Amino acid sequence: MNAIRSVSEFHRLLSLPEPRHPLVSVINLSESFFLEDDVWKGFVNSFYCIALKREVKGKIRYGQQHYDYNKGVLSFTAPNQVQHLDLNNMECGSGYLLIFHPDFLLAHPLASNINRYSFFSYAVNEALHLSAEEEDDLITILNKIDKECLHIDKYTQEIILSQIELLLNYSNRFYERQFITRKNHNHQLLARFEHLVDEYFDSSTTTQPELLTVQRVAELMNLSPNYLSDLLRMRTGQNTQQHIHQKLIEKAKEKLSTTNLSVSEIAYTLGFEHAQSFSTLFKKKTSLSPLEFRRHLTDN
Image: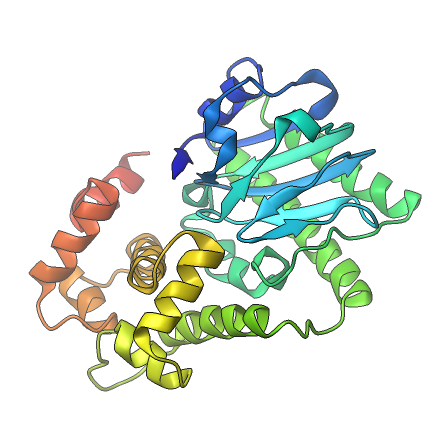
């Protein structure tokens, strides 16, 4: 599976100049076009993407489903979600893409709150329908974000994140108005899996928690571990263990950036008996030790 790891790399693949900010960008689709590259045949982004598109032809495969733009213009994808584009049958029309890396959210409440916006889930695969007035409201927000990227200072992150949060809250209103509960069984299972893992890492406990395992999640869902991993791999390109590790690292980053807990205390809250095991996994996934990651945030 190909990975688009940075905002800069995504700009290159859309034939655009370097982004103004390394972690966030507003892309005008009328000024971009897809480079011919095998990456589009199957890829994951390392960032969130909110797309406001008009006159789209073709469909983006998202997991094992297709994102349907026939009745709407606003769509959402989260980091590490599998996507496929068929450039031969794809016309992106006009509109905007807002992309932002999860690291841009660190040390801000949105880092922990963004999971409550359910339209980033694989269970949603239909673009939101907007009125002309609603589109104009969101475009105004996108223009403010784009303008703020022109001058980067100590206020930039807070100002941009407040605009992103406003856009997400508007989108929540549109989403709740438009969608009803999906009946597809596999979609329900995937949404339930995401909820269980998020709930586990978000819950607080005064006793030693257990490290979340594939076996434990499968038991909670009344599925066999192999069936659950096969389902997740088919839908997302990642098995159960990879999903658990991804959520664990996200939660660890949040705690390292927003609390004064020691590495040992963070390891304990995530279910590790030994801090060294946590540190080893964290460095394997991020190329930094927990302390190096925390120092890097302070230095910046």
